[in-house]
Image (cartoon, rainbow, N blue to C red; front, side, top):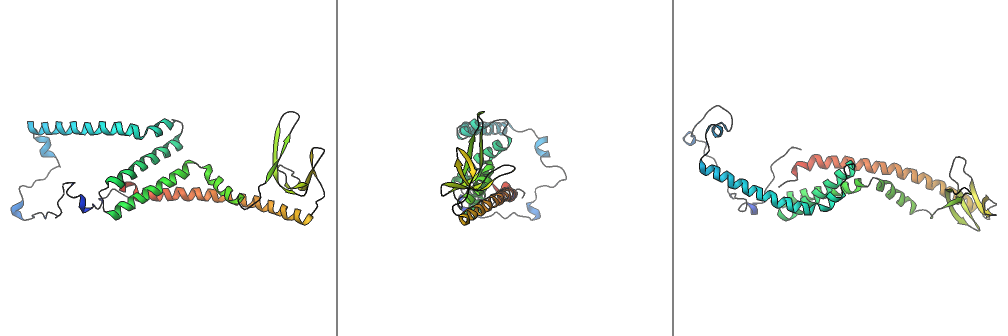
Length: 261
């Protein structure tokens, strides 16, 4: 969306030096001072500005410089945490961090000093806040998967893994198991996993006869469903990420040129 004018709140007219009544131009022939064919600002370029006008320009420039210095000091304090976290190799995370910091600053300024009508002002603030929420999620890509995985895990038992230590000093973590009787039911990880009811015999995890085969079969089916749900959760996490990217593109297209006052 291209830059467009914004509806001003009438209560700011006096502060902005605007009249409450629109001046209607006089289009009659008597109101015409002169007409010509040429380019804009030709008269300014051709004429030498007066001494008083140059003084006014100088004063205006000094005021602008003072304004720049004021915000330079203010911004260094406001952005200190963001600047300290930035690293030149963090293209993605650094870019999102800068966008989040600036949009939060914009929202605060718009809420306090915004001159547009209340309806338009609230729309601008809401779109900026939604964008910040999206950027926060996108800054931690792994959170999409961990959030979906946590939802799945909340519906299942707290599975444990078999931890194997080797004489060489290495360690292996395998499978998902839940207690049953004096042993555990589950499925190992790896290329040729074992599945069923296990007990520790002489320190070795060994397949054994189940004290309740029906319960063992139910637990094994639950483990299988758990892995299917985890796989679906990861696919959904990818869809969530794609949806956030699409929504961010919509928000930027519709509001980027509106986030000013």
